[in-house]
Length: 435
Ligand SMILES: Cc1ncc(COP(=O)(O)O)c(C=O)c1O
Image 1 (spheres, rainbow, N blue to C red):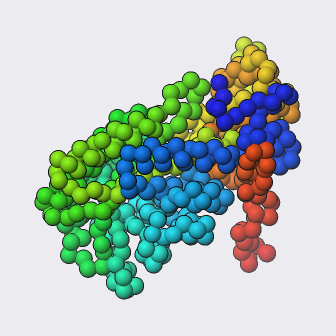
Image 2: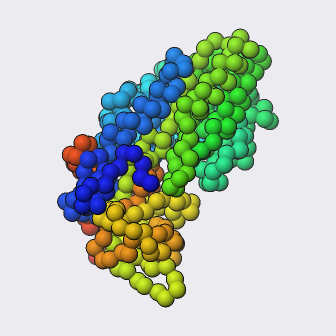
Image 3: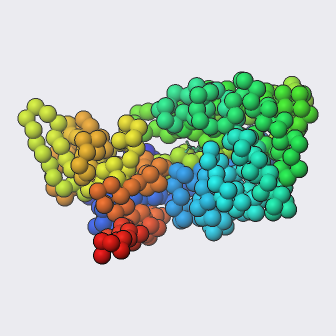
């Protein structure tokens, strides 16, 4: 069953954002990422509404790492989103798209001196990951004759049912200050003596692709108890609590959607209950969704080149997009639903493996899928690739990265050009002794 923002037209072709996928592939070539503008807006509004209905001061900072295409960021800027940035370039891009620095949070366990300086100059909130970074920020702010606005990334040790590579809130993870051993509290104490930082918040991000509301409620409870302890033990009052991102999306047909209303209800109830119990002021609440906003708004179109039949085994079809264009299946064993976009009304009667074009056995997009019998020239569509798709693509085997188009009510326009041979070699140099 397709998600509700897709249609199938009378030709049996997939329709994305009002545009026929087969025509898009003909016009723009393959492999091609297609982003649906209306779906991005819908997802953002649904997320935002769930929280703003229940609480006054909510800040949604779109996590650019999911998809930092300029047009995508522009759409979210128009919607009023702030930005969660993790690099200088994400920060600069957000500024260029019109998101003010004071609506951004800067996260990550390695922020270079130059990156921190840029963040301080633009009044971006920095979520500090370790004590050395805190000292660097303090001295940079002194040099810039300003005060840096900071929070601390803490590690609440919340178990999340997701892939270990994207579970980030466990004690053993590389991120943030450990709460249970007292290191997190010690970080706030260390900042007390510093004149050039203003400590205004606390941040956690427990992981990505979480489809169960309970870990988010546990996160809210642990962070709020910590905020209470900060007040009781150090007399520190914060302005914001940043719960990070992590809300998952269904990738498999029939997989249950995480009800964002339930997540909001359980988190906000917990926050308000503890604010009341501990007599805390009301905090601004920050969220950093990435995947939830753009994940299902993107598809990847890939041309079927060859079909290999083997007796008693699934058919192999080779398409022109592999782990270079979409890394998630190879990296995490991630599942992405696949269909043939030009044969949406055909019967799925053939057990099929979908291979990418690269010289690695791990280079496949899906295995043992029921698809219509594929032929050379068919168009495969890989769903739910709007987040961590093009963003994690690479140039393995000197394959140019795919193009991306934006569709809206049947209109389509390029938002990312396909790379060319010149792009691939532009930065290479031949040393003098080889000339
Ligand atoms: C600090 C931080 N915030 C937000 C996100 C976005 O997560 P998601 O796309 O799962 O919402 C991530 C993802 O890794 C992250 O590390």
